[in-house]
Image (cartoon, rainbow, N blue to C red; front, side, top):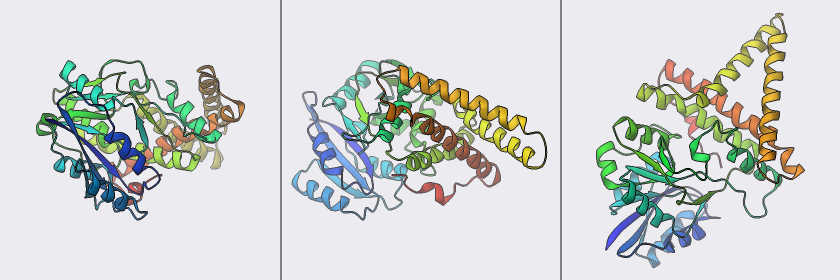
Length: 342
């Protein structure tokens, strides 16, 4: 039998972990394939580890290992070291997967010869979720809010720079190495960048289907994107590669707004600050209108979309400025940006 290993970093997922494991173990695999599930627990203190250990004791396909540093990159590498499969599939506990998710990953790798294959990033609220999580999901899926990222296009099939989660032949890690443990966020993007710069290829398949459950609170969303923005400069510094426009705009806008505010506070003209706010307000209104036009959005959801868009942009922008400051100052990440945001 051929083995495909699913690797999963987690911490404090008592509410979700049992259903997640059941879903993974019920995956429909091609003939002659068997599944191994390796969960790297980041010192959970809510009973998650005990649940996984109980499942592992009853099913030899499951292994629970320790991730004492508690961050995703170290968990992935620890699980990778334990995995015995010729193909590695990464999963996340807060995502739900089509029953043929793993099978489609195997098929995409076989058909394309890719070094990594994954599906689009599809956000949907939880069942019974409030209007805020619906607003977060609606804004997340909009190509205008996402800056045209191909990973949000559910119908895209083709070569890309990065994919959501991912699956790899074991040879990919032998050739390009594992995940960068100095990164708390963006370790996936960095690994894909390493693959592409090293001559490898990344494939996105619309047949690899999953549903991501986004943050349900505005404060959680802001902290999440603060971390995404903060760690991006560390990736760019490591590879000496400029960011795409969608990564630079939020930080540039926040910097301009801060400079204009300082000028106004010191007695200078206020019109630059007012003009920037007006321009941003018009932009947010246009993006909100695009979200409204993308489907049936109830008023209670739509009225929250502008705040969600601002949380995405200002969180990422402030985070990227702080990240660049630390990159240029001493090149080390701050511990406060290593905490979980759920």
